[in-house]
Figure 1 (cartoon, helix red, strand yellow):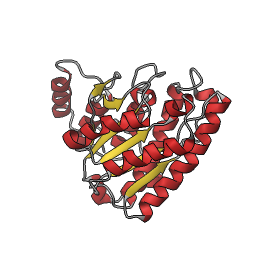
Figure 2 (cartoon, rainbow, N blue to C red):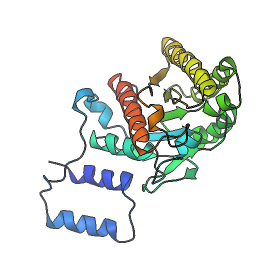
Figure 3 (spheres, helix red, strand yellow):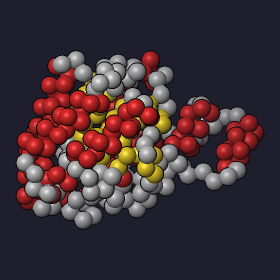
Figure 4 (cartoon, helix red, strand yellow):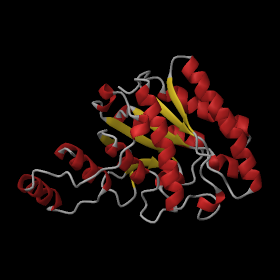
Length: 256
Protein backbone atom coordinates (compact mmCIF):
# COMPACT_ATOMS: atom_id res chain seq x y z
CA UNK A 1 0.00 0.00 0.00
CA UNK A 2 1.31 3.45 -0.90
CA UNK A 3 1.32 5.89 2.01
CA UNK A 4 -0.25 9.32 1.71
CA UNK A 5 3.12 10.94 2.43
CA UNK A 6 4.84 8.98 -0.33
CA UNK A 7 2.13 9.91 -2.81
CA UNK A 8 2.43 13.59 -1.92
CA UNK A 9 6.21 13.43 -2.33
CA UNK A 10 5.73 11.98 -5.81
CA UNK A 11 3.21 14.64 -6.80
CA UNK A 12 5.29 17.56 -5.54
CA UNK A 13 8.52 16.20 -7.03
CA UNK A 14 7.33 15.24 -10.49
CA UNK A 15 3.98 16.73 -11.45
CA UNK A 16 3.43 20.47 -12.03
CA UNK A 17 0.61 21.58 -9.76
CA UNK A 18 -1.83 24.36 -10.50
CA UNK A 19 -3.80 26.24 -7.80
CA UNK A 20 -6.31 23.93 -6.13
CA UNK A 21 -4.62 20.67 -7.16
CA UNK A 22 -3.12 19.93 -3.77
CA UNK A 23 -6.44 20.65 -2.03
CA UNK A 24 -8.26 18.33 -4.42
CA UNK A 25 -5.64 15.63 -3.91
CA UNK A 26 -5.95 15.82 -0.13
CA UNK A 27 -9.73 15.74 -0.38
CA UNK A 28 -9.51 12.64 -2.55
CA UNK A 29 -7.19 10.91 -0.09
CA UNK A 30 -9.55 11.66 2.81
CA UNK A 31 -12.51 10.37 0.81
CA UNK A 32 -10.67 7.32 -0.56
CA UNK A 33 -8.50 5.94 2.28
CA UNK A 34 -7.22 2.93 0.36
CA UNK A 35 -4.89 3.71 -2.52
CA UNK A 36 -3.46 0.28 -3.26
CA UNK A 37 -4.00 0.85 -6.98
CA UNK A 38 -1.61 3.80 -7.04
CA UNK A 39 1.72 2.14 -7.73
CA UNK A 40 5.01 4.01 -7.61
CA UNK A 41 8.21 2.82 -9.30
CA UNK A 42 10.25 0.32 -7.30
CA UNK A 43 13.96 -0.47 -7.21
CA UNK A 44 14.18 -3.76 -5.33
CA UNK A 45 17.66 -4.73 -6.44
CA UNK A 46 19.45 -1.86 -4.69
CA UNK A 47 17.34 -0.98 -1.66
CA UNK A 48 19.09 1.49 0.66
CA UNK A 49 19.52 0.87 4.36
CA UNK A 50 16.27 1.74 6.17
CA UNK A 51 17.81 4.55 8.25
CA UNK A 52 18.97 6.31 5.08
CA UNK A 53 15.40 6.60 3.81
CA UNK A 54 14.60 8.76 6.82
CA UNK A 55 17.13 11.38 5.73
CA UNK A 56 15.70 13.90 3.23
CA UNK A 57 17.78 14.41 0.10
CA UNK A 58 18.70 18.02 -0.66
CA UNK A 59 20.07 17.54 -4.15
CA UNK A 60 22.07 20.12 -6.07
CA UNK A 61 22.13 19.24 -9.79
CA UNK A 62 25.26 21.14 -10.85
CA UNK A 63 26.62 21.53 -14.36
CA UNK A 64 25.94 23.07 -17.74
CA UNK A 65 23.29 22.49 -20.43
CA UNK A 66 22.81 18.77 -19.75
CA UNK A 67 21.97 19.61 -16.13
CA UNK A 68 19.65 22.34 -17.41
CA UNK A 69 17.82 19.80 -19.59
CA UNK A 70 18.67 20.96 -23.11
CA UNK A 71 17.27 18.51 -25.66
CA UNK A 72 14.46 17.11 -23.51
CA UNK A 73 10.89 17.75 -24.61
CA UNK A 74 9.73 18.97 -21.18
CA UNK A 75 12.92 20.65 -19.98
CA UNK A 76 13.23 18.24 -17.06
CA UNK A 77 16.24 16.45 -18.54
CA UNK A 78 17.47 13.73 -16.20
CA UNK A 79 16.06 15.48 -13.13
CA UNK A 80 12.43 14.46 -13.69
CA UNK A 81 12.92 10.71 -14.10
CA UNK A 82 15.56 10.67 -11.35
CA UNK A 83 13.20 12.37 -8.93
CA UNK A 84 10.47 9.86 -9.77
CA UNK A 85 12.81 6.91 -9.17
CA UNK A 86 14.02 8.27 -5.84
CA UNK A 87 10.50 8.94 -4.59
CA UNK A 88 9.47 5.49 -5.75
CA UNK A 89 12.28 4.01 -3.65
CA UNK A 90 11.00 5.85 -0.57
CA UNK A 91 13.17 8.97 -0.39
CA UNK A 92 11.99 12.47 0.36
CA UNK A 93 13.53 14.67 -2.35
CA UNK A 94 14.14 18.39 -2.63
CA UNK A 95 16.02 19.69 -5.66
CA UNK A 96 17.83 22.94 -4.84
CA UNK A 97 19.41 25.56 -7.06
CA UNK A 98 19.31 29.13 -8.29
CA UNK A 99 17.93 28.44 -11.77
CA UNK A 100 14.56 27.02 -12.81
CA UNK A 101 13.85 24.84 -15.84
CA UNK A 102 11.41 22.10 -16.71
CA UNK A 103 7.75 21.22 -16.36
CA UNK A 104 8.33 19.36 -13.08
CA UNK A 105 7.20 21.11 -9.91
CA UNK A 106 10.58 20.90 -8.17
CA UNK A 107 12.60 22.28 -11.08
CA UNK A 108 15.39 24.07 -9.22
CA UNK A 109 18.87 23.31 -10.49
CA UNK A 110 22.25 24.89 -11.19
CA UNK A 111 22.65 24.08 -14.84
CA UNK A 112 24.38 26.86 -16.79
CA UNK A 113 24.48 26.20 -20.55
CA UNK A 114 27.85 26.88 -22.12
CA UNK A 115 29.90 27.13 -18.92
CA UNK A 116 33.13 25.23 -18.36
CA UNK A 117 34.25 23.60 -15.11
CA UNK A 118 35.98 26.57 -13.48
CA UNK A 119 32.98 28.80 -14.25
CA UNK A 120 30.62 26.24 -12.74
CA UNK A 121 32.95 26.13 -9.73
CA UNK A 122 32.28 29.80 -9.08
CA UNK A 123 28.54 29.12 -9.13
CA UNK A 124 28.90 26.23 -6.67
CA UNK A 125 30.24 28.40 -3.85
CA UNK A 126 26.90 30.15 -3.42
CA UNK A 127 25.03 26.84 -3.62
CA UNK A 128 27.11 25.33 -0.81
CA UNK A 129 26.81 28.26 1.56
CA UNK A 130 23.21 29.31 0.98
CA UNK A 131 21.30 26.16 0.00
CA UNK A 132 23.19 23.56 2.06
CA UNK A 133 22.67 20.49 -0.16
CA UNK A 134 23.73 17.15 1.27
CA UNK A 135 24.17 15.66 -2.21
CA UNK A 136 25.79 17.20 -5.30
CA UNK A 137 25.21 15.69 -8.75
CA UNK A 138 27.98 17.07 -10.95
CA UNK A 139 28.08 16.74 -14.73
CA UNK A 140 30.66 19.13 -16.14
CA UNK A 141 33.53 19.16 -18.59
CA UNK A 142 31.99 18.60 -22.02
CA UNK A 143 32.20 22.31 -22.86
CA UNK A 144 35.88 22.21 -21.93
CA UNK A 145 36.39 19.37 -24.41
CA UNK A 146 34.47 21.28 -27.08
CA UNK A 147 36.80 24.24 -26.52
CA UNK A 148 39.82 22.00 -27.00
CA UNK A 149 41.15 22.01 -23.44
CA UNK A 150 43.39 19.16 -22.35
CA UNK A 151 41.99 16.38 -20.14
CA UNK A 152 44.65 17.16 -17.54
CA UNK A 153 43.49 20.76 -17.28
CA UNK A 154 39.84 19.71 -17.08
CA UNK A 155 40.61 17.22 -14.34
CA UNK A 156 42.56 19.84 -12.37
CA UNK A 157 39.60 22.21 -12.56
CA UNK A 158 37.29 19.46 -11.30
CA UNK A 159 39.72 18.76 -8.46
CA UNK A 160 39.46 22.40 -7.37
CA UNK A 161 35.66 22.31 -7.55
CA UNK A 162 35.39 19.12 -5.50
CA UNK A 163 37.91 20.34 -2.93
CA UNK A 164 35.80 23.40 -2.20
CA UNK A 165 32.59 21.38 -1.89
CA UNK A 166 34.35 18.92 0.42
CA UNK A 167 35.12 21.68 2.90
CA UNK A 168 31.92 20.29 4.40
CA UNK A 169 33.02 16.70 4.97
CA UNK A 170 29.43 15.51 5.37
CA UNK A 171 28.59 16.33 1.74
CA UNK A 172 28.26 13.55 -0.82
CA UNK A 173 29.44 14.19 -4.39
CA UNK A 174 28.20 12.06 -7.26
CA UNK A 175 30.52 12.83 -10.17
CA UNK A 176 29.11 11.86 -13.53
CA UNK A 177 31.10 10.56 -16.42
CA UNK A 178 30.80 12.80 -19.47
CA UNK A 179 28.36 11.70 -22.15
CA UNK A 180 29.36 10.25 -25.49
CA UNK A 181 29.75 12.85 -28.24
CA UNK A 182 29.25 12.57 -32.00
CA UNK A 183 32.43 14.55 -32.76
CA UNK A 184 35.43 12.24 -32.66
CA UNK A 185 37.89 14.72 -31.13
CA UNK A 186 35.42 15.74 -28.43
CA UNK A 187 34.61 12.11 -27.70
CA UNK A 188 38.28 11.19 -27.35
CA UNK A 189 38.66 14.03 -24.86
CA UNK A 190 35.55 12.76 -23.08
CA UNK A 191 36.97 9.25 -22.83
CA UNK A 192 40.22 10.47 -21.28
CA UNK A 193 38.45 12.83 -18.89
CA UNK A 194 36.21 10.01 -17.68
CA UNK A 195 39.26 7.91 -16.85
CA UNK A 196 40.60 10.78 -14.78
CA UNK A 197 37.24 11.48 -13.12
CA UNK A 198 36.87 7.83 -12.11
CA UNK A 199 40.37 7.84 -10.63
CA UNK A 200 39.65 11.13 -8.84
CA UNK A 201 36.59 9.65 -7.16
CA UNK A 202 38.59 6.61 -6.05
CA UNK A 203 41.26 8.93 -4.63
CA UNK A 204 38.63 10.94 -2.76
CA UNK A 205 37.18 7.81 -1.19
CA UNK A 206 40.66 6.68 -0.15
CA UNK A 207 41.05 10.05 1.59
CA UNK A 208 37.89 9.42 3.59
CA UNK A 209 35.59 11.61 1.51
CA UNK A 210 32.12 10.66 0.27
CA UNK A 211 32.26 10.39 -3.52
CA UNK A 212 30.70 8.06 -6.09
CA UNK A 213 31.38 7.90 -9.82
CA UNK A 214 28.22 7.71 -11.94
CA UNK A 215 28.92 5.67 -15.07
CA UNK A 216 27.02 7.05 -18.08
CA UNK A 217 28.37 4.63 -20.68
CA UNK A 218 24.87 3.26 -21.39
CA UNK A 219 24.11 6.41 -23.38
CA UNK A 220 24.96 6.09 -27.08
CA UNK A 221 25.17 8.52 -29.97
CA UNK A 222 21.70 7.31 -30.95
CA UNK A 223 20.39 8.77 -27.68
CA UNK A 224 21.52 12.30 -28.63
CA UNK A 225 19.41 14.96 -30.36
CA UNK A 226 22.29 17.07 -31.69
CA UNK A 227 25.44 15.05 -31.15
CA UNK A 228 25.90 16.42 -27.61
CA UNK A 229 22.61 16.59 -25.68
CA UNK A 230 20.42 13.57 -24.89
CA UNK A 231 16.87 13.01 -26.04
CA UNK A 232 14.24 11.94 -23.51
CA UNK A 233 15.36 8.31 -23.70
CA UNK A 234 18.97 9.32 -23.16
CA UNK A 235 18.03 11.43 -20.17
CA UNK A 236 16.16 8.46 -18.70
CA UNK A 237 19.33 6.37 -19.02
CA UNK A 238 21.23 9.19 -17.36
CA UNK A 239 18.72 9.28 -14.51
CA UNK A 240 19.23 5.54 -14.04
CA UNK A 241 22.98 6.12 -13.73
CA UNK A 242 22.47 8.83 -11.10
CA UNK A 243 19.99 6.62 -9.24
CA UNK A 244 22.42 3.70 -8.99
CA UNK A 245 25.16 6.02 -7.71
CA UNK A 246 22.87 7.58 -5.09
CA UNK A 247 21.82 4.11 -3.96
CA UNK A 248 25.49 3.21 -3.58
CA UNK A 249 26.07 6.26 -1.37
CA UNK A 250 22.97 5.36 0.64
CA UNK A 251 24.02 1.73 1.06
CA UNK A 252 27.34 2.96 2.45
CA UNK A 253 25.51 5.06 5.02
CA UNK A 254 27.01 8.29 3.71
CA UNK A 255 23.93 10.49 3.41
CA UNK A 256 23.39 12.77 6.38
